[in-house]
Image (cartoon, rainbow, N blue to C red; front, side, top):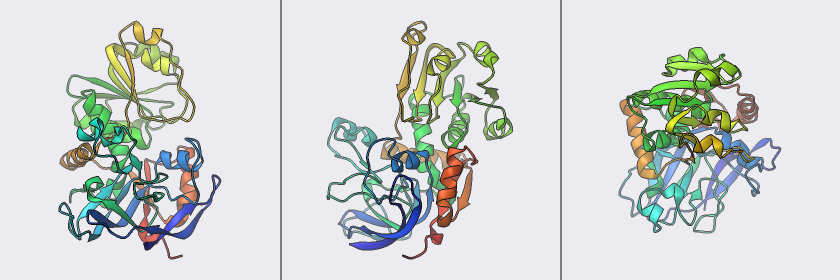
Length: 349
């Protein structure tokens, strides 16, 4: 096994501690990646705090990973030492079911293997990107284009693909009206990507305090959802709504903003159920849907799209010693718009 330095949570309450974890020795199809940057996703917080189910501690989160290939297995053909690469939310799948064969590994019928907090096919408990190195089979590694800075590219491996996939699937394009609920880590990427796809983009946020940011990121319109007039004024307006909020919201109120045959897609994942009134759907043949990240092929497509359109995440780079503080700021919505850990500050256990 390969010993690497990491920051791990040893309980739901934290704090993060410097430790060492084991990575497997390289198998023929494996790639060893020296991690340069790791984004902090709200999913990390939900998982470590047990809000999505029980986990085993110590746990190293992090599934927005950008780094450099430092070693390859004897059978690797897709990558070479020195390549700029990324790893997202999953590191394996069965590879044989109908979803995997379609390149939709995130919907693997046997369940994909999460980058952290899962048991892989080798019987190892997966540990994520708040660490100096990771070993991943080459089929679950993506190439980061040279024009994307590694630090700002890291959040694309979750926040980018999580918003790109539904925008692409439901046809964000010129002539389409797209609303984005929430202007946070996911929301700001949804705005950038939907704008680049040519859609007319509206941000729906609790207040107008980020309005200037939203317009600069590519939104055409910005409304406060705490203003009752917003829902009256925008009723029946949108072809597609992307809800990025990982907390309870009034889904029925947002469904009322859809046009005939419009779709509201949930990409935020709150711990508690969301209530939907059937009459919010049947009156205008509206749909309420969900979407989870994207397959490996689509993730590469997203990175290439972002490179072509010069899209990257808006980030605040922090040291490994600031992870606990950053988590509290994420919970307080005090980040514009993604924290990224500089792994060179990891330290040695």
